[in-house]
Image (cartoon, rainbow, N blue to C red; front, side, top):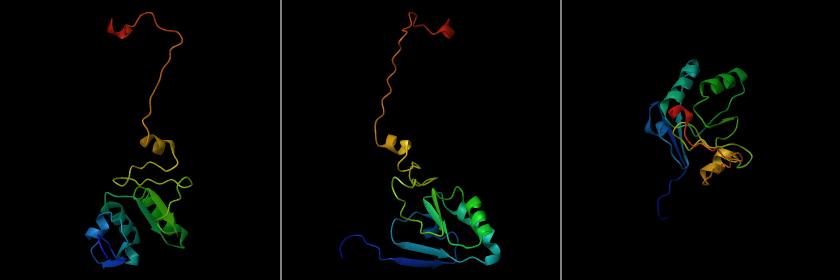
Length: 140
């Protein structure tokens, strides 16, 4: 009753460049754009080119060729891509997560790169055969 709250919302649009399709929204909002079956591949390219964001995506299909085509065309359109599953709920430590493009950091949870993001690594070099000449040979 107080503060900013979005009720679960469904938006149907006929505009493939509708604002809610081009921007990331972290809330219970689903936007749908209905395409012609004959324009399936064209619509996949439209999905790939619509937004700089690429956090997650999913497809629900039984046709293996449609799944493969979607996976190939949208390979850079989602950091996590789900087939016949909801596009939320990556299991930390068991499934990589991090987004792609302008979404997230693309570090995968449970990975060394993700750990490094939250630490301050320090490098130490010890030479067991110390040099006697500290000049760089290429500098004459």
